Amino acid sequence: MNIVFMGTPDFAVPCLKALVESGENVTAVFSQPDKPKGRGYKLTSPPVKEYAVSQNIPVYQPASLKKGDDAEEAYETLKKLAPDLIVVVAYGKILPKRILDLPKTYCINIHASLLPKYRGAGPIQWCILKGESETGVTSMIMGEGLDTGDMLIKAATEIGINETADELHDRLAVIGADVLLETVKAVKTGDIHPQPQDDEMSCYAPMLTKELCPIDFSKTAKEIHDQIRGLSSWPCAVAQIAGRRLKVYHSELDGKRHEGYAAGDICDKDKFTVVCGDGFGITFTEVQADGGKRMKTADYLRGNKL
Image (cartoon, helix red, strand yellow):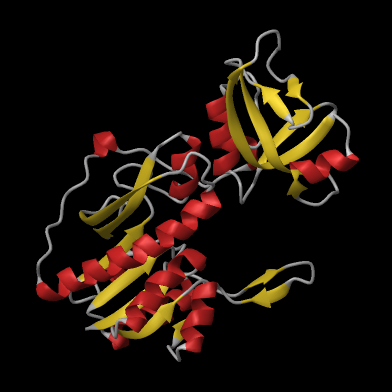
């Protein structure tokens, strides 16, 4: 079976690696164009491209699949490749209908949520932001809608009470690779059972913005803890407290109700525990001051009095 793989970031690499290491015939990889990164704005290849190059798999990086010369060239390339299956994992581009119709079997997508919940670009972060205790990975047949195609295989996993979006991302990437191999096997044997999504059960997980960053201490400790965990990689939760602006990367719930304090008061200066709107405390365990370095709270408190 000839497979064309479409993906871009770290999350997609375990899926591509799983296909290669299981002996599947990946004939080409499509990835986003190289982008400038870092202080020197050095042109940097996406992680998927780097892995594909290391495996001597041809890589294509069209700027667009919808219009212009790039789109036409990409379409003609895909036609010549004549894929039996197209696998899409965090590619970052919407596939037009003429590409969806190209493979002999399907275009399948690996999505980092238990669909139909958390369709969209930020499922990993939003399931934490919304306080979910469980999430997972779903493989689906791609359609023209955004993550609305028929579901094939699901794998669920519990979310740890202190697990951050970064940590969950890495776990789901591995789970996604297993789901993909199971899905490819089902496609090859014809043993697939597409299940339509229930739109009434769906919710949307849009891209994150910096408007989500400010911590509102009138919220419950659990809500603030979920905010910090969900935004841990980017754009990061921000606390305005004790006259300072701090990015907060990690936190813990202290599980205690603190009487006599208002929301936003620091009730334990040795641990940096702040009282929230429900009276319970949240302890910041990793912070970064403006212009400073990211550090454990214990190290921060050695040089900064609260």
